[in-house]
Image (cartoon, rainbow, N blue to C red; front, side, top):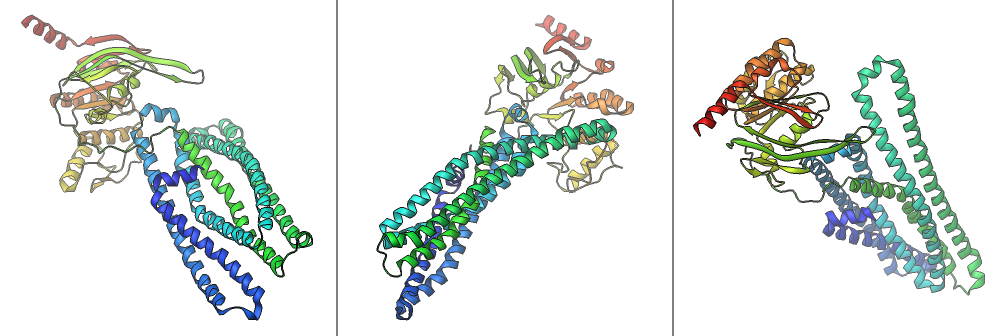
Length: 552
């Protein structure tokens, strides 16, 4: 069972202690029925010691149950805590391309639904262990009274287990199908929230999306849940019916077949009736445990290194000097679109110097953003190498390498806290940048926190630029930054901000469609469907290159 293996992996010592307390709690309950039967059979002749033991067990039962519950809940929450951190840490540590391939909706389904389902499964384990132990103790008592009756009861339970195993496979398939439908429903939720404005503006599209996607998927989730719950309930009912037949057999048929001692027949019936409670609870827990196992299977299917130990991160190396950044035969391929066509960028052989302003241009789908992600270390080249000052960037150095870049993506996300800004001096420095970017009337900055990020897209990108200025890293990358700006800020960006960064010896990569400002760049690279169409040095760099070659 995946759920038990999960606990063993995370908390083996505490699990053993929890199982031990569950065993003691279960034996206490089984001992209670044994002594209760003894007292009932002896009547007024009951030995005083038996009564003392009965009172002691009555006191022990709640104590041991509490200890078992406390330990197992602690284990469950500790394991879930580690799973949550391991899963989110694995998402942060995984290659960006792998996360993009998995997709946001499946990850949301895992983080919001599967982890909750696993918690429910783990929380049910104390009750499961307790009741299994009670059953074991009751079976031992029946075996002490009669081996033949024990064999009859074990045969009935074995048949029950076979039925549950066969029906359980069907139930698992149904719960797995339901889980897949839930992932699809999360995809529709994602589209609903991202495309809400467009849906509101087009009634036909809105009605089509609601009826064709949301309604159909929600109905399938409902139907699969009802079907899975029905199969679980039918299995439960079959098991209960079979056990009732067993009780009738032991109470009516068995005494006529065997010479049963006086009082033993009643002991069998009372014990079996007592066992119905634990069996009923165990049966009711199986759907919860099955769903938890399916959830663990889904998490395992993500192929993320959840259990891999995380290496301690080295201090940021943003201030380290560098002089040459080189792409040697770098290429990257991926499939996109419904037709699953393969797009390949490269192989590229490019070299960049410190302090240059480089424009990357080209049509939509030419590979500009893919080049940026390769350049900054978010994508790992399928072939070739990215080298800094002649040293290849490897898995061991990639995180340190990324610390040299401040990147503003076209779909940038703005965090409300400004990392690295602390104290009044940091706040004032951030306010100065806000005034320069004409954001001071829109936001307030206090203790390194922005008062809001709910701004227009152009203003949000200026907020991202503010954060990039505060990071003060040696290389800046702007992916279509000016596309959402008004004419004033577009001109300010190209004619003022970029020259200021160059004057500070910053290297700047600008992804743009705006060729009116190419004269600002030191170099212009044009891409056409994954290949370099042209790589042009501006006149002042060409002259410098000629003079350098002549001097040499």
